[in-house]
Length: 310
Length: 309
Image (cartoon, rainbow over all chains, first blue to last red; front, side):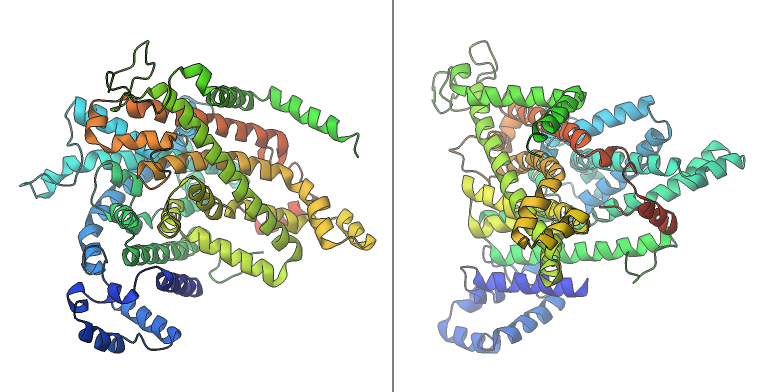
């Protein structure tokens, strides 16, 4: 994990040096850059005359301190932009993750336990269609029907002017969260169902049944618990969305989150912002894979941390 | 060998015909692709012809899918858009698979330092969500049809790479490869003439499924306005009209029809992929049918099957 984080940060650093803009501009505020004599002094002080390796480590230190540089588009410090956008993304993704995970585990368990039953058939059909539908189309359809035709919900944005409390914002949250949840459901249901089916035929489940345990107990404490392993991996790898945002869903609902920031930055080639956000996403993903290893060792005592597979 | 090949192919084809999902998928794709090819004959309208007299008209017998704000016939645009979208999906998937196959074959057969480098490289690429990775590359390379294809190819080779590599790892220990080596065949010949044909099935399945993934990715990218330029109609570009709230609210036919085209096509491709997997790669369907004593023993000892997730 650590070497990977270093190599990614190095690639991002050198890529940003190769980008067609003067890296100086992304480090100092535009006001300070206006004066040429000032510029030369700043260049020296910021270490632009040092060897590139030294520059890389200096940059890394600055990143650790939370000094992410400046956006070349707005001149704002990137840390400020992130602080502004992060709450919106966290709100959206966290709610969607909780809802979709709970529902998917429940449906997947029921579908797997009653193979060929009604829940199983419907959920399989829905999952098959679900992976073919672009997630932003779900958002557009919900917008058209529930927001424009029925006016049950606002048509986008995070807050209406003058209404700032959490309760006022709640209606704004419903459609984006629903869209993201539906988009995440299909794969997770399929995954949970297959995992439950894998477990249900194992010997220890037969043993549990022949001990005379009630069926719900067999399901809950033997089948469900043991089929969580592979499902956990999928869920953990969705956690980085908390940092990266859901690009398309945010675009549909004009949701002012990180995903929206990325799109804006790409549209105007705001390299520093793109670099910082992608670095954060990479670190978040590496952290998630670290969490997966820990979760695996908790769920399955046979897996030991640090042990090599095979 | 040579006179056995057609009979195997016929056998597989017969199996595929009996596979319901595969055949349904095949029919869907056949219909979509033919209508995209014969777009001129079917639609009767020029997709770029603006008609100031009939702007934003809802679907009617004249314009089956209505017209857009510039008076262009949507049915014709969806047909022509399909041409470009399918072309992008197929080309990108082919190129991505090519990269993955070549790198996977080399890494799997030769092993050593090259293997480590390629594995690390694939991990590096897989660290990022696909859309974010695509967006990063768009920043550097810019937009356009060929750029989108190139970007899709270099951001989507990793699954095939891992698949091919693991196939090669197990195949290179087989007796016929040992015989090849004893004959003194060059590495190139062993890899591309003897081993590669044996890994074709998973590659074909991956190729099919990647087409579906790329069609959806193109739609997303163009919806954001960062994909193919607006002058080239693709399903994604047509959907991008829905960025305007007034379109979402009033002109539903402008985004419902292109989206339906995507959903139908992608469902078809996924059906074909499932069908092909059943026919070409029976191991995926019936577990343990090919397991040897050694692997069964290993399964008993370790307790769980290794998952390729």
